[in-house]
Image (cartoon, rainbow, N blue to C red; front, side, top):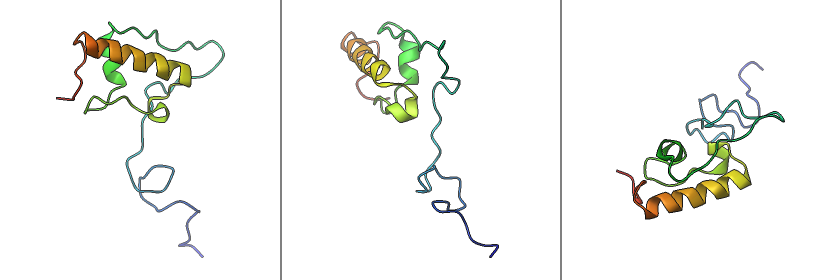
Length: 93
């Protein structure tokens, strides 16, 4: 049968889950290997923080951002500090 598809595939450009949504792009696709060290997260580095925020200024999920748990916690703390001193907005503009 030529018109059968694999399980979970709908023939659209959706994500791997098959829900038809847009594919997510990781922030650091080259991540990996024993020598790779993540970005140094500092609350004063606004350009780096904005990479990990959505358009509504929410912090991206670990899966989408491509960070591990330790990096995600550091990112959360840095964003909170940057918001407190008004370097990053609380709500997206």
